Image (tube, rainbow, N blue to C red; front, side, top):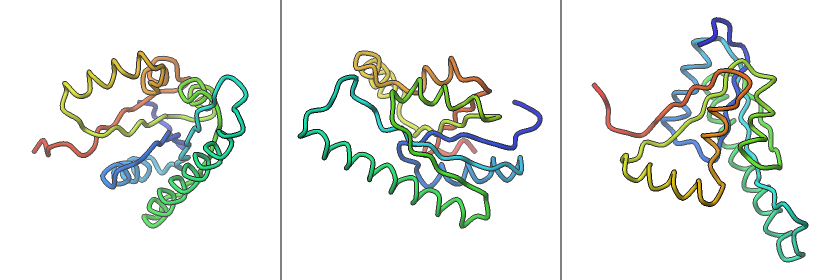
Amino acid sequence: MPRHVSDILVPIDSVPNAGVGRLVELARGYSARLTLVHVVAVVPYPPPVSMVDMYRSMIDEGEEMLERTRRRVEMEGIEVRTKLLIGVPGPTIVDESRDYDLVVMVMPHRPWILDRILDLLKAVTFSDVRRPVTRRALCPVLTVRVGGPDPH
């Protein structure tokens, strides 16, 4: 873990309440600012007219999710910014990581077998974000599991 962390990038798709608590603890511990980023996946070819409305909806949903999470973090007294990006999620987050000291990936706790099945599905559909970010980010990456059984 880097000694000096002032800017933390947090890619979000959805963040459970426990995840917000962990982000707040981390930011407070480092006296760092959080940047919440959501990437709307781009289709590699021009979308037909019928998909334009779908993209608008995906952008609106991403903005609402960022705003909801931003408010929850700000209520805890943490400085927070938001970014909505459009692109291929994994590589877009990797590119974005160049401007940050740390990337924090909040992941829901799932039974290991479900995790493995989802990993396989993501590999087949090219929708995995965690793998390219943890392997290629331009700064350290911390993955935080939330929502599982209490280890104590």
